[in-house]
Length: 79
Image (cartoon, rainbow, N blue to C red; front, top):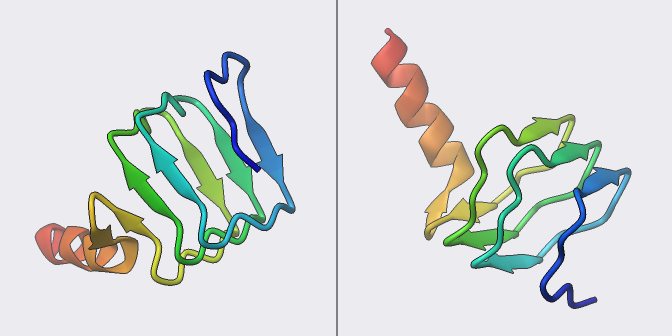
């Protein structure tokens, strides 16, 4: 499915978005709840205020960096 010039707010519930690619879009304040985002890529995407709960983020990347690596780096800065 291709979404082009999407203007309405997105709320994804129990969705399979594995392998999806998001480029040059505004996803601010979007909610991803119980969503499979494994292998998804985000490039030039506004993710401000995004809520991701109970999601499979296996190998999901933001600007080419795996989300699991970003979380690990964040945890290291807290300690």
